[in-house]
Length: 304
Picture (cartoon, rainbow, N blue to C red):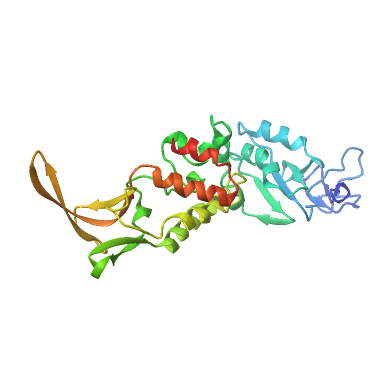
């Protein structure tokens, strides 16, 4: 691979015009290009395998760290483009985890280019998760960080960026519809719309799909073990999601309550369900972690 990282041009020391590698004189100003020490690389030959990152000199505070990391890579090079010094680092393994430290150091630098297997890629489409990964690296318990445990915003998907937490007020618990159940339809049950939940998850996690800390099989495993239907009032782990005005798809609930010998009615509209505590989550995660190959001890740490 090192043989492919060759000098592919000369930059004129007088006018900065680019010339072919075998030129003796500048095609623009006629300056002598054969002066010792004037053979300057003006672009990089991008490897067709692995991950390659180019970045320009910058006054950003993170630039020295980025330069230090780039210099440790095999085949590190520099060149002159548009009167700027550019730096070149390549990761033959093709593993994003190997390039992650450099990508993180370049998060505040504007002039940067990413190639994967020789093809230029949109930086944020690949490294959109780096700021979050940096926070994870400094967390007290990194594994718990991804599940939101450190902020008391627990999520079952293994990524904060899912933005679908296990809380009583989470909107995704209202993705579904009410159905009649029981003898002659005397009861109602809530059926989750798992396709809608799946779609929102895919949308929210798209930016982080390359994150090496994201277990891609976990969200589907959680959906598989999330109950298809729940019956609030009968299932101790679930209750109605209350709204005090009628909305499309909501049903009216009338509850008889007793207090100090008096009986009264509590009326409200229900547009979905809500979990009561973490018991249902613990059961779902235990099964999902088994399917996804995640240490089951993490379930206890997350739900205790």
